[in-house]
Image 1 (cartoon, rainbow, N blue to C red):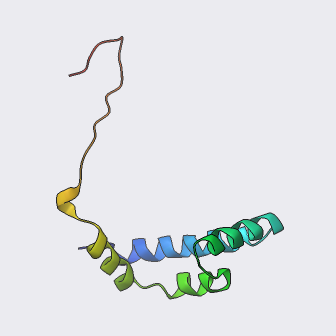
Image 2: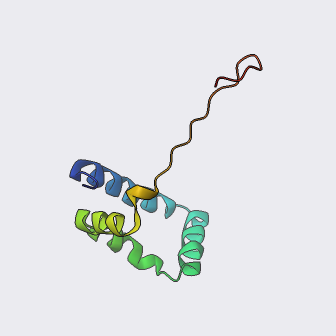
Length: 86
């Protein structure tokens, strides 16, 4: 299956917006530049990468890296009056 197109588009646009808002201040720009540099990326290509990212790219990465047979679930019960919910 994978991610549906409307969810992908909304998330991608949000990522573009967040990235652009970081560039509005000298401190934000310095932080983004440093983070990208440490990752071996060029801050000037990040926006192009985000804008050109496709749903097929994301779903292929999910298929390659997410293994449904390795999922796990944790249930956290609230502690009520010191009693054990189980």
